[in-house]
Image 1 (cartoon, rainbow, N blue to C red):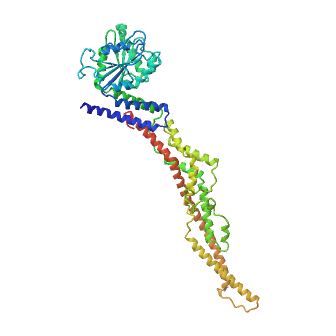
Image 2: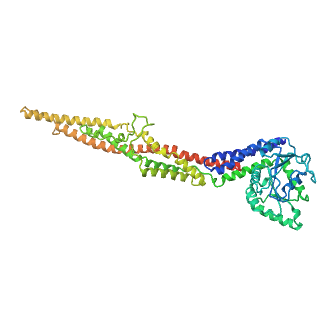
Image 3: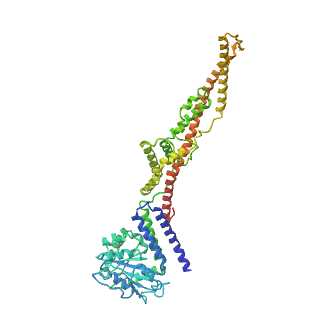
Length: 549
């Protein structure tokens, strides 16, 4: 039953650790190393601690020189284990008092505690708590640590390291230095998020008059509240007289019996790490990129890619082809002297692979490049306007990551777009046939009249030409053929103008669609992926802190 309950208690811890690790991974290359490194250390420390004995609770005694920390350690342990001194630090290495040592060795190795004292008997306490182990302290590892204000640098390093490893932190203060700034600013305030696994002991109350104890305790609690530890239990005690030692033992035994201190310590580590990650890097959830921003980006990129220039070339090319197919046969060849504008731009050729084809459009000038860069920057700013600054920067970088390849990708998209120039209009052969008929009629009338003129010139009898409504048929054929050719030419030119405008509009839409695809692939998709990454990051942070996104 207890094992099942323990697994249920650890499950939220595992979930929150996984969420914290997810947040850390998502923040890689976004947040600075000085922010991510402590989180990695917490995850590594949590992984190691969870693999070690869950049956042991590590309680560390921290204090300044002269606070009576070692004396209090001995009083709580009920044995003279630690060497105590009144004026100078005597604890140079951490010392462990271990109850129920089975399974404690790997844990102590990880804590780098070499001095180990096996406690054979429980300390005497005024009463036996219900549900407590027979030895009173089963599974407890009590640590006496070097003074945090020691002049030896290695002593402070030991204290700082173990402050990040022990399950429960017991801060031993004395009436003379309980308000010491080095203690509060260097340790208590930075560790304020660990209030659930922190105890504070005001030792040496025997040095105070009875009437002074309460004011000093109230003053200490007020200072602790300013440190963010307003909910921490404060125990007045005297290692010399034994006053309050029993209550402190009971509090420690209660923590040990619950067997949740290591979990609560790791949860506090997670809270602190999540808060550090969230500081300045987590804000409201970002919405999807507005459609208007995507359209504006595509419009600016289309301008920089000379879509209008190509559409105008499509219009001119269609009119040229229309004239070549429907113009007066005698003069239509003149149009072929002008090179097709689409061929001149190396566009809409089907004899090359569009994947490697390149246009002959002019290289984007400084103004066009600046326009494209400005469009990309404006799009990124619009997409990440509500994001914290660090993520706004990553969104900008995501948008500009493909900037060097953007001109070439746009050119390739232009070159690979089907502009429809190879499709002939249905009316071209009809008008072309009529033009040839008109030319044939005009030529027949002209030859007929020429023949009659030659006969008259050679003094032959000229046969009368047939007439229609009084007009000679040869003349009618010549005039009608010429007039029909002119009318057909004017009509086809008008139709070609309208059709050319329509085809240019279709080509413009296709080109804009091709530009949109490039913008989507090179700019929009990376930005949207970065936004999804940010939203996943803040959701993971919320889960790590035990909440929801």
